[in-house]
Image (cartoon, rainbow, N blue to C red):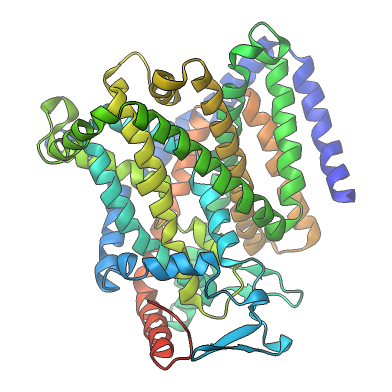
Length: 528
């Protein structure tokens, strides 16, 4: 309670100051902040991280090639673990093989109680670890990003988006297995894990201590920056915009700048209350909010598809034909492929390494089990949620409307069935997606922060306060260059992460082979 009061008291002056100022000052702040970093961002950061090559008039970001190449390599190297391990992953999150409190083990067909001193290390269940990671990836990209991809690449982009999502499952398997294997567990049971740990410790085992330390620090710095920007301010900004634009608020103070400030403060306090409790508190929220928000969104999308059921065969025909023989207006075959792969990679973040931080907190003694659970993440995020958005856009035909884009395009697709209620549905979805993304990214940023600055209580509280203040700032500013900078930091994380995954992939293969041998000997009950 003391921490929550401290947080509220710290945020209050910022909210009062912002609420008391006029729109002219807000506009000046926007110009000053974006102007101060725009030159550096657009001259050095974005061109480096998103460096692209031109091929047949199509711009191909090398970061995308780096991510997809890794996904293909791991899919082949681990003999299509994304498909082989799918059923076992489902059973794990259902708790079929979960041992309550992880104090039981399988001995052939009999369940055997284990002494409490053999209880597995970790803080959350498989399901909670998955929902925490999902809450960081299922976000605005599933609504607005897909609309951008389909409008630019046509229906065929959907096909390549699904393929990239399936491939990304293998990258998630590798990074999350390593996250558990090299995690650090404190005497009080608190867990710290993720790329910064398997880069530093894993590469140290390979005789690359200095190189691994440099990669780990670089990753942590990028993750901290990304948590403040794309994982925070951008989410707050878009959620506030959707909330204040609801027709029910038209003409009220909520539609004005002051309303944005108060909504930002409400979000900041709400996020603060959750994140102060650590990963257990975050997991307790995400294991409820993620199934609800994904279920609500997918259900509404299915209602739209059901209302246009006669158009479904044509939509799938357009998707398949557009994937392999697209019209020139969509940039040719390569252009469509790039749009689909880009949306999938940028949505599920497979290979970026962020999700491994959340999955590392799972309660298990078998790292491979969490790798298997993690491979469901790109499937849910991309193959399920993103595809639902894409189908709504294709079946309703709104992707051909050049007068709308992003969330507005998706809203127009939903309006074909829900009418004016579509704006409310999308507003709720955006707010929930944004809130869940913020609480997960706060954990990612915190663990990276403590890796560099130490995990003392003042160090942690400092990060959490800064994070919550950023929510208020994000809710009132148009971010521009700030978001581009933070996006660059998030995707810069994939460079050190994938280097580590390549080097440590034999370690994961040994873990997988050992795990399978235990299954064959009857030490673990499984259907892998």
